[in-house]
Length: 146
Image (tube, rainbow, N blue to C red; front, side):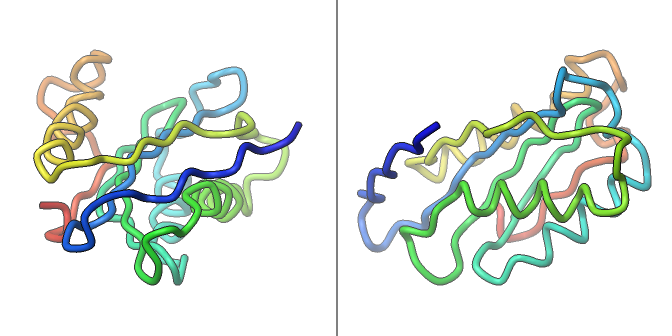
């Protein structure tokens, strides 16, 4: 399957580039929401030299990430998705697999970053996993989010 070329980022130069990224477990198996996977995922989010992962929520069968490129505005978000998938899966051989591909969206305004984060942060509540979002143990957001 051929990959479509990425359209260059066309935001004002004074505006930060922020991406929203989602990827899923193959067959949507509910296998992610466990401390071992969370630990591997958190390590993966800190490992990529070209990306800053500002926030993430790990759900039972998918992951949401808000990330910013650190070197070039035109860094390919698919590279981050592939790296996070690969590094998170290390040590979990044959237990589960990632679905191929990912969903990504360039967030065009700082307000949309906050709106997207609030939507993602509330995901465990909407899924009936917890009553309040901060009760869900598999999330983080740093001060770089806003």
